[in-house]
Image 1: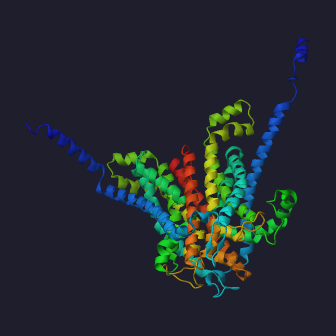
Image 2 (image 1 turned 120 degrees about the vertical axis):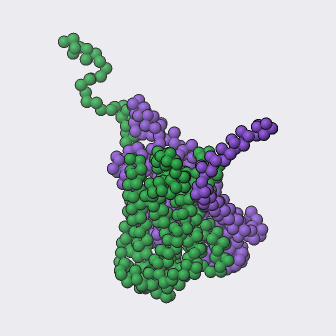
Image 3 (image 1 turned 30 degrees about the vertical axis):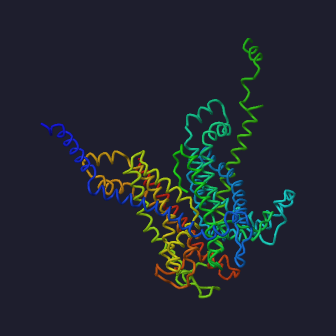
Length: 326
Length: 305
């Protein structure tokens, strides 16, 4: 009798164990383990990336400290390194790209989601996305040979004559290789990202809301401004942040057209430099160990930018369930 | 007579054609302008794609020939020669990157859709990890592989290139696979469970085959994306010679870096070869994109009915 209280408990736990055995056969455990292993590997790679970049940058961090961020010398032969010029160039090229790309992409997305007839949408939508498939090296080469000379002869004189008094549109230089051209190339790269994400967002706006506004007599534009944009604005902000992240980190297309400047120029039509472009430019033939360490310091800054933009985009976009393909 | 008198009393003429006037006309004009701007924006984007494609075709077509595909580049740059070694090297690097990345990406996706519950902490941590991985600039991934592999091997290698490209591909494959796995109708899963089939068996024999089309599509798109990636290869696999090699663990010639090197050089003798390569690369990538989209549309129709 003394065992009677324990007996049902044992039976219950034995039953549970049986159920577990049925629910999780050996094969299930193996497959589940494999999947978890793949996930673990990914997590390990992420930590390893952060670790490698920080270790690589450590000598430069201890030598230059935070003043690396605003010093504008980058003189490998003298052992002077600072990210000032590159941070400035990264900011300016990204601002140019965002100023052009954000309104353009939102307009494209509105056209695709709200106006285009089905057959046009089915063709134009993929075409816009395929703009993102052009490899950055081809875009850079194209920018160097075709876009830069065109900008130099056709765009720079007009902007200089009209807005020259602003100071940022200086007189045209000898080539079209400039901060401005780099900004244009970045625009081409991020428009498809922001446009296709925003289009998917606009398509999630409920038909009832749109039809309700139309029934009240709103014009197409009033539907867009009064219903569609307000209910998706935070998602569009998230898409924009993702585009910004891409613009900040693009190396190859920029290095081809920006002209690798060593100092800050006020005019957008003069050469510039960005963090990623400097890395791409210097990594092949560094002259000293300290230069490699400084390159890793630049990469650390880029890594921080990448993580921050993605976290912001996630935080904003949490309430949308849109497939993120970029 | 009375009816005419009443109509004269109305503030408007009911027989007049319905054309907007006053405030409504202004609103319609604003709306038309906004719509026109949206059409123009879409046109600009498509025109940019057409312009780049057209310029690449124009500059690259003259370089294309059989010799271009079956000869190696000249030893010290200069005119003539082909790009065989670059294309073969790129194919090997990208293919092996896919061999590494696709299984890992698919396994992660299976975990997140088939094993993890809706509130699983592990799944949300994985999602965060994939998002962050996708957001890391590709040149930083290159530097990571430089520190991890190239510095310890003391030489560039196609292997290091494949690892870097695989890191870029994993989040893409995982995300697209997850997307199709979610489309697999749950009655299929339930039917399989009801027959007493183990989870792993129903995943391998029912769910994966149903989703196969979508998984292949996602993998093709990821491969196409990796094929054009230049930044990581510039960092870990750029000191190659002109000759054909299949040695994965040594420096391997590849298309993206050779285009960049040619376009960087002050000597335009290498330009035609670079344009030819750009044309081959762009054509393959765009075709892969179109093919993958058609395939995806078909498999999606099959899944969602």
